[in-house]
Length: 318
Image 1: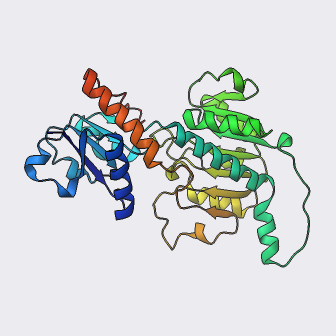
Image 2: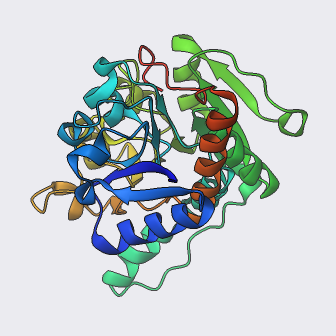
Image 3: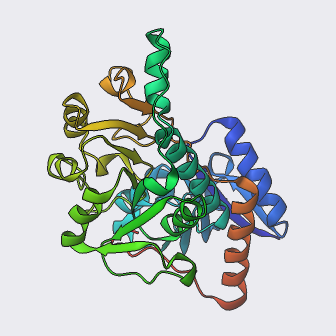
């Protein structure tokens, strides 16, 4: 009988059906079944679980689980909820995700570089006033994070003519194609990058070291009139400090796709702040088709070699 693989997710019915269909098409030699439809005997068969925000209590009901394949690139929730169990967690590394994130970074960089928030406010005030044009070559974009997402974003921004700098916690080699990107590292490098950037883009994972990384001190180190984009994780930014920097006029605008609590609560002041653009966590969506192909490759490699794919370092959190 074909291998039984459990699918555990907190998704709406249509999203779940789309993922199960894509995974079943990519792995026709296996049976991909949602957890809710598994009997106790079937749960005891399962060695591999494919997950998207799973209920930890359901994971605990899979006694033979050898490893967990995430459908998301971010794994901080899995590490928090499941890390202590010692079951290897494999994050999704999908070039399509890097491409769509880089696309979003470029799109929202243009939004800020071309003063779209100001034009929106002028429209609301019935004000007809052209603003001075600032070309990409005179706009410095600072990327926080130089993993797959940050590297892809750096390429797109550099190709569009922006001045690009990047920061990482530890030194990371840049490909020859990014020789013009100025790289900063460590605690000393962060304020230097912030000081030179007109737009700061956060693409960092959430770890113990990055939680609250961007607060009053860091916003104070940014250029007057600079803007922030947070496409990493919400708790990296101290929301009250960000609002204070916007209210003081030190920062001009913030584009936020991630938040401390999601969905963003209706009472949050971010919804109504004129200096904030709220996005519903859409800048780096998982593509069911490309994700399924990567998961299928991981499962087949495991079956052929017995080797679990490279897993998350629970200590580092990613």
